[in-house]
Every structure is written in structure tokens, then in C-alpha cells.
Amino acid sequence: MSAAGQAQRRRETAPPYRVAAGEGVDAGASALRHALVRSLSWVSVARAISGLGAIVRYVVFARLLTPFDFGVVGAASFFEVLFQTVANPNFERALVAETDAIEPYLDTVWVTMLAQGAIVALALAVLARPLAAVFRIEGSHRVFVLVAPIALLIALKSPASTGRIYRGLDFRISAVLNLAEVLASLAGGVAGILVWRDWRGLVIAMYCGHLARTGLSYGFYPYRPRLRFDPARARRMFAYGRWVTVRSITEFVARNLDNLAVGHLLGPRALGEYQMAFRIGEFPPAELANGLGMVSFPVVARLRTKPRTRDRLFGLMSGVVALFGIAYATSIFRYGPALIAATVGAQWIGALAPLRLLCIYGMFAGFAGIGTSFLDGLGVPAFSLRLTLISAATLAVLVYPLTAAAGASGAALAIVISAVAPMPWMLKLYVRANEGRKG
Image 1 (tube, rainbow, N blue to C red):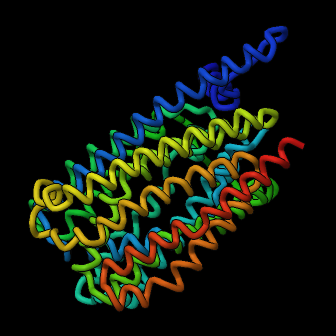
Image 2: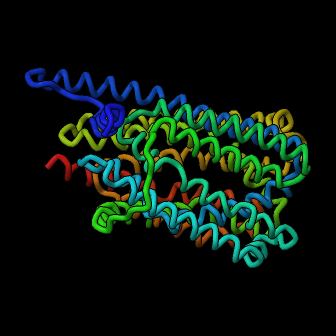
Image 3: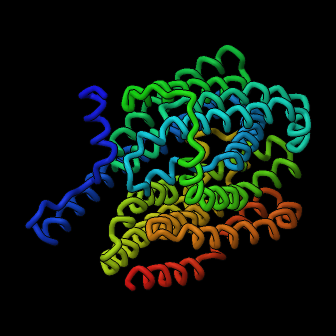
């Protein structure tokens, strides 16, 4: 291995903080605080770029297209993400908790992701017509064929690059990747919309964003992957990743059954309006919680002997999400119509009613994100799965009757209730996991 490769490996496998012999606990605590503050700073930048970039794209694209166009691409994205979630063994997540050097695992991860991408792409292309019928967009079924290769493009990134970012708490890289994706997708999307004047411009935006992110990942992690698969290492990663996979599927159900209900019962235009309301409604508190969760997962995993520190960190992060969520919800209820008119335009005013409910959902979804990241860090992903099962079951029972009765606002009400339902269990499971770590 070259000197550069050895240096890269040391950066990947070294913990984010060290305590030299004789420095004691105080030095270790100081190093941890420094790592936490540094990581939170870069996570904040990364999430701000991603979240604000998404809002800018929504505003620009919504001014140029109609809710119907967004509904068509939203339908394709629904199934693309569903298939990706079902087929993902979550090996990258498993590598974050891996104590050994991870370079021997990289080829296995890359080959597995290629197989996953091929399966997803094939499923979208073959099932295009029946999938289009689910969302009542039979005349635009080609969108599934056009979106299909994106799954392979995502799989071609530098192997486990996301997991290596988490592992080293090097979220500066996330900020750069997010910025590249935002700029590329915005530029490509505007060009595509000006050429075709319909939903195909949104598909071009997706391609440009993922192409920029995949290519740049090799700039930060210049590894040449090979078609080599190690069954023993795959089994080791799957032992952890299977829990994350099952939970990811239930999380998808808990966050997307409302989209299915709206698209199937109300059609693509209503789906486009609902997804716009969802994005604007959940954005600030959920993005904040996602950023905090990105840091808390690896940090909590290292706080194995510090239960009081974990408790303070949990309370602090939850409090920040609560204050931010309440402030945002208040502003939406007061200034929602003016916000929609000033940003995406009056043609999107149908999104206002569900938006007022979905900003409440964003706050409780933020609480859930903090809780599951702490449970994962404590080594009990099965507890996180229980929470998502409660949320998914609640939404499954409520979403169709409420959507049929009250339209998009009914779907929004159903997902708010599904986000609130697991909160008591989340606190109970966190206390139990924390007590177990104390012992």
C-alpha cells in the first residue's frame, strides 16, 4: 500500500478522539467535547446546504412546472425509494460500529450495492405500467423507466463512503458533497425544464445531482473497487445491518403510506401539492434533528460508561428540536398563505391546509429521529424497530379512511397521529437501554 493509502486508512480507522496514557478522564472528556462541537458544526453546515438547497430547488422548479409534474416524479420516486429500502442490507451502517479496519470490507460492500442497484433498476423498468396505474399516471409511465438507472448511479459511488464519513465524524465531506449535489441538480434541472417544459426536467435534476455526488466521492475516498465478495464479512455486516434494514422498511411505511393514499385516491396533482406541503412542513425541525442524529449516533456509541452525559445530551437535543419546532409551527399558522404566494406561487395554495398539520409532524418526527439515533448508539437497534412499527401500524390503520374523508388534510392528520403515537414508548425504551448500559 502506498504512503497516501496508508494515511487514508489511518484516517478512516482512527477514532475521532484519543486519550494518551496518563492524560486521564478530563483529557478524554475534553477531546470528546471538542469532537462533538466540531462534528455538530460541520453537520449543521451539511444539513443546511442540503435542506436549503432542496427548498431553493422546490421554489425554482415549482415556478416553472405544475403540481401534476411534481406528482409524476413523486410517484416514481416513491417506488424507487421503496425498492432501494427493501433491497438495502445497510452494510454501511454496520461499518460505523465495526471495531476492525474496514478496508477489507469495501469490495464486498461495493459488489453488494451494485447488485442492489441492478435489482431496483430492473424492477422499476419491468413494472413501469402497473406501478403507474397505482398513482393514476398511466400516460406518464415512462418516468419509471427513465428513473431506473439512478439506482445504479448511486451504487457506483466510492464504496462505503457514507459509512466512512460517519465512522470518522468527518462531516466536512458531507457538506462538500451536499453542495455539489445541490448545485449540479439545480443547474441541470433548470436546463432540462427549459428544454422539455415538463416533468422530464425534474428527472434530469436527479441525474445531475447523483452524478456529481458519486463522482466527487472518489475524490475524498480514492479506492479502486474490485468485483470481489467475501461471504464471511457479508454475514458479519448483515448481523447488524438486518435490524436497520427491517427498521428502514417500517420507517418508509411510516413516512410514505400517506403519499400512497393521496396519490391513489386523489391523483397526481393532489400528490404534488401534498409532497410540497410535506417538504416545507417538516423541513426545519426534521432537518435539525437529522443533523443532531448524525452526530449523536457515533458519539453515544462511545459514551458507554457515561450515562449521565448521555442523559444530558438527550435532553438538550430534544429541547432544541422542541423549541425550534414550536416556533416554526407558529409562523406557519400565522403566515402560511403569504409564504406560499411569495415562494412557490399561488398555483400551490392547495398545499396550505396539509402544510399547517405537517409542520407539527416535523417536530415529532424530529423527536423520533433523536430517540432512534440514541438507541442505535446504545447498541439496541431492535428497540428502534419497535418504535417504527408502532408508527407504521398507526398510519396504516388511519391514513386511508382519513384521506377518503378529508382529502390531503386527512392524510396529514393521520401521519401527525402516527408520529405522536410512539413517543411514550420511546422514552420508556431509552430509559431501559440506558439502565442496561449503566449495568
